[in-house]
Image 1 (cartoon, rainbow, N blue to C red):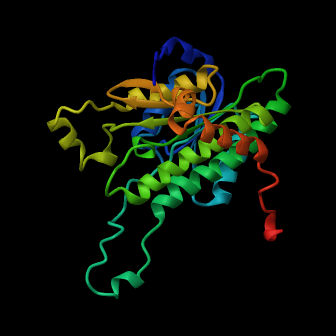
Image 2 (tube, rainbow, N blue to C red):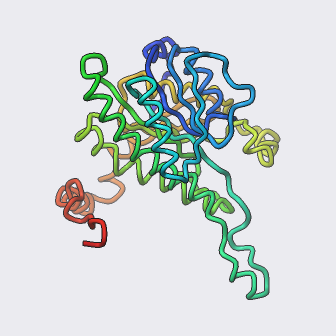
Length: 299
């Protein structure tokens, strides 16, 4: 991994840029909204609840948005595009922590007949897929329509330390955040090469928000470094305001690291040259995946 220097002076590059963000009513997202507005950006927030208190800045717009509802995600981006005539960047930040205990079914067979909630998967993964798909459409349109004034567009996904670590008990949360990394890996070269749209991902370690009040005490008691929300939010702004692409930013103890590029460099050592060559040959044969993907209706 490599240490990333966050330079707040670059955030001024976001002045007058239109940013669509989901999940920004509380926590890291709320701090990111504040930081974006301070940088002079125009922010369109989609969330299931309005921020309280809401920013009074006239560059801020709130649109009620449930990211698990595709029509709601389309409405968010369509409204932002119509209001501002462009969209420069999108941040998919809406998320839920683990709900319930997946394997706590007890002794009776009756309990297993009740399906578990999939709300965590629906918000964290399905919602991210919806946001990414719709964002690509509107960013593509914006780049074309504003070719004389817009030369950059990007998407920022939000995964988690649980997107690459082993976290017993966080079953659906870990699966969802690993899924976000799968989406990132499959789009990072494709989107920039075919659409000119940058895509990056942020993976925060333990961050002091209301989502983790039940466990953060143990972190503090054991002297484990934790993030403040601003540390992660500033990494958001770094991704948007600098010309970076296909980077995975791990934020831990208030510091930011890029963790993907070095992994790519040593993959041949990890697999061995023969298996690495087979992997690369397979990826080349697959190309953009059009010869593997089924059409609608299974054709």
